Image (cartoon, rainbow, N blue to C red):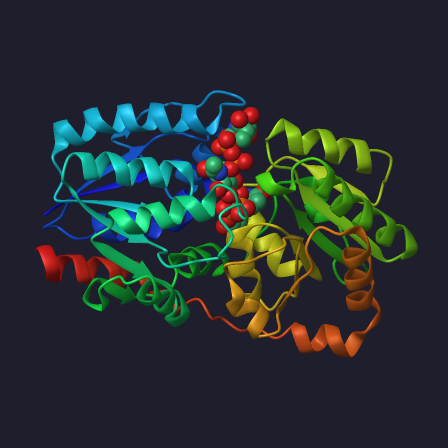
Length: 369
Ligand code: UD1
Ligand code: UDP
């Protein structure tokens, strides 16, 4: 059986890595790794950590490229690679533009498609944008739907997908997180070693979603900035996404605040180990919403909708949107109310047992082997 894995951004690489490693461990499977390189530095960081050398690197990355450019360049590059390799199945993970292009390129060549992390829905096509559309479009084209949770499966059933093609596997993010956080870890970054995680309460902040760019993002950052200034023992670490539209607002709002540490995007090992040490997380990231509950870290989700309600339902995440007052109030509440904090800070892991990659490949071997 020949399996081609296609991915292009940081989160896809993190969540696809356990799948690639599992595939490569099986002698009867020929594994081809193709990266679009929708991201460049942020993708390469992950490839390095998991020691994955792509067979094909389409290198489509251009600074500030539009969604159409990403789609067109991925599609064209993938057409050639699929034509040459003729895989039995092509795997994509998640909801980025690389994912949709990968599924479309495979469909055009009548290659079977396996969608990892299938069935997540926010029910608003514009939030997250364009991910909600990407994941719906990918579902339409897929032969195998690997749903992380029961409610993800139910979303697919509601849309009329055939139950025999839907498999609950857990999310491969937990496989990756276990790999990354199982050993003691020492940071290379001086600032991360210098922080006093016992004496001070360190907030981990990340934000990059397209629907938050501009004013909503400024509101998020101002609310965090104002709260931090009210507490002597609260500090923030913000590994800033490489998108210049994020960096501009981060610099404008936080520049003069010595208690807010703006740093470059971290490699996955330091990032996941930092998450283990911080007091709480403020984020609009998808993957971090899955990782933080597994590590027992309360999360303030700065998005209007989330397709990851499992954390909210388990009371480790609170969905607050991008309104200044709501973020200000919720963050202060969590800092002031110790009981509430401790209720939220219990480790629950709704996203799987860390064996999702093995389950996915077992299913493929059974169905196609
Ligand atoms: C993309 C995905 C999003 C995912 C996010 C993870 C789409 C439409 N969006 O968003 O679903 O949550 O990745 O981080 O697929 N840049 C660099 N170097 C890099 C990466 C990005 O300089 O390694 C800068 C470039 O200027 C680039 C910009 O960031 O144009 C935005 O990158 P892009 O891939 O278009 O979108 P993201 O916001 O990263
Ligand atoms: N992450 C990382 N370094 C960082 C920030 C995030 O390695 O500086 C990891 C994080 O642990 C998670 C993934 O990147 O696994 C999330 O990526 P991102 O927030 O960019 O995308 P999303 O999950 O929202 O699509």
